[in-house]
Length: 603
Image (cartoon, rainbow, N blue to C red; front, side):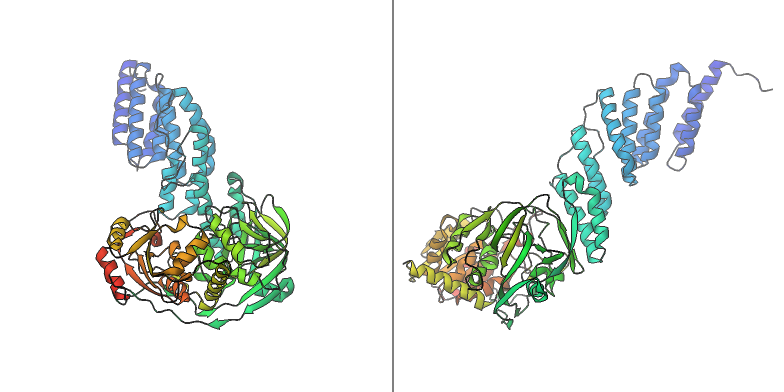
């Protein structure tokens, strides 16, 4: 029979064992060490309980530093069981570490309940400090690692922490949690759709849509307006058939530049007016749904694989949509207003003047055709500036009512549609060279003549005056000429006057641009109205150094007037959060003066 060890000596021996076990514990043997300690806790003398708990908490802290959060959580939990005075604090540490452990192991289902336990534990410990697990940082780590599902689940938990615990409200890159979840889900669903797995994409959306307040997704076959009409789903009249157009010649001050973009198609699409019955539409988007079809020329185009279609993805969109393998998934609206009829002059980026003039205004040429009923109102987005409405009023020959649509789905009993003059993706897909659309001179030229004829009929003076103007972009935050004041001062000595286009009405802008012999300005929306230059004008377009910029698009647009354009590439001002097309830049006065001399303008 073993000799009996006195109680005091047994306590000392146990402490020695604890010290040895705690000292030697590591990631490899941590679970075994904690098993041994847990089995011996009942033998810890009451006077040594706080010291033992402190040792366990120190061990937990060490495990945390080794990224062994499961072991750390268990060590903190044992400290909470042992301590009398600091049990609440150790329990809180155990819950926090357990949450991190589960999230790191993607065992997200168990975290919801722990967040409620965390709230209670914080209250019990009187803790209002900033030491809660950063679920947003965990989600960000998953994002950077390309694990979209891990990021989504972590951001969903971050929403609970935000609402229940006053946690962080914005993501690392400044998005709301809801916007981030929606964007990540869109990426996931797009990948599934492109692989033809549309039902799986539907199911993925279903798992998070209630948290985001979204409706279910329907699946639709993508068709062009011509295809839909050919198959008996509408009326279609072609105004201008398919034709070949020329690639523009681009001129740079520095000489030939090796562009990184891809030249857009030189096969101009047909121009038409079409009517479809019983259509569901979404203001601020180009999507038209009819039955189980999505009527959308851009998405149905043979080159659509290069396009990052933004309908349903942009921040101002009122629904979710993804595309792939000839089908689209579009969110069903909770409610929609109903209109008897309308002409579609609303859509993606309609509030942006450059998009408006190039993509939308030419449609009025075809809506004026007798094939388009005179009684249909012209429907526009209600967030567009007044100058956009002025264009409609000027060109509409039927005196139709203009109906601004709020951001709510609209079901039309009958809808009239007309096309964009060319295949024009809003943006190229990541990893694909920028698609540089070429604008057909015949359509833009017809729009130009229609506008100038209307102004002449109103008695607007369209004579050339020899004016030299520089377009200011001072009021805009993107694609700014940072040293604009320096350039204005330099050109003022050579008879140039500064113009702020956004302060002028549409008619005032057209009259000004048409009267000028020389126009200098940033290649931006303000430059779009050079379509209305007189055909002898010379245009000097200033821009950053990005060789992927849509130089062909600007050249074909500007030179549809007969004017000539020269590009001056300046020096880009680096920016982390700005689209490469919209970064700010500088040019030197010397560059601008040399450019003017190059186009035959004496200074």
